[in-house]
Length: 358
Image (cartoon, rainbow, N blue to C red):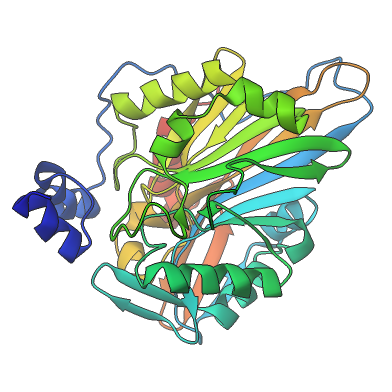
């Protein structure tokens, strides 16, 4: 390993130096620069006329980060209702879980009990959630703590994706969603402190690139295939050309839906062939450091209707719901934007920039 890469690994910085040195500026002023042409999709689409009979609802949220155990969190009742009524909810657990919350530089630890409370406060029912542990902080405390995190989540009744426990593990997790067989694959592009490739670790972009997904769909008998990647660069509102190229390969390889996280800000969505790609949901619950930059408080909930019945399974309608995380002292509110008052206008303007209404 070259000295430069070794230093970055010791610091827990997975990015090239050029990106790392620009990080703090991007954190303070998240970029809205487009590095490639982009046809933006609006906030919602209508269900196709032939989407009748068997349907299922998927809800996606972004990163749940380590936050204080005594923070008084209030969640908009309409958002809670939408989340709790979904057939399946997907979130990313942005830290190993332990007995307390601790954030030291780029090394995170989240309070296991508080994480369970956050799921409940968001309206997430543990029997209907898939929690991804595939992210750049997954190995902050080694492979043993990653496996302990999985055990703690499963002990709460959550199903876990994104972890490779051993050589025989499948990269796609099949789950029954209202009678439809949906395969979910979660992975990370970045690893702050990569451990052994042969032991317990998160699935990676390299793993995903090596898979023949048409074969996986056939072998597992999947109706639909969903990707939930931790990718792209932080605090940039538009994905990099490399990320879009990867999304295109996924769409052509057999994915129906790809929903990303990691940038800590919201990114837009596009259609690639018949696949729908939302590049970043932003944060579901940011920590105090991220929330200091207001665009990191803007997140979205993506709700997607799946159509089944007599016709081949496919995506139906989608709806993107924006919300804002705001913290004052020991209280934090997650509020739907709705018709934005003055205090929320800049968040609404940023959302409308990424998801313009027709």
